[in-house]
Image 1 (cartoon, helix red, strand yellow):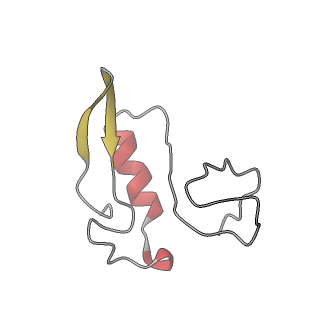
Image 2 (tube, helix red, strand yellow):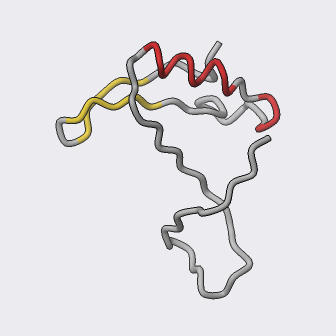
Length: 77
């Protein structure tokens, strides 16, 4: 089962699907997220792209709160 119900809608007339990967009330710990079920659910809705957001801090002074950072390294567990 995916982490939560899919929310279907449009952003600037583009079909979009939202999924709260930690559950709508953030009750699923990262190690317990069923990523395969989440991806499968998105595939069933014919999603062609996946954009993921995250909120975290930084120890680098030049990165201020509110800055948008695009990662170039990823640890895949």
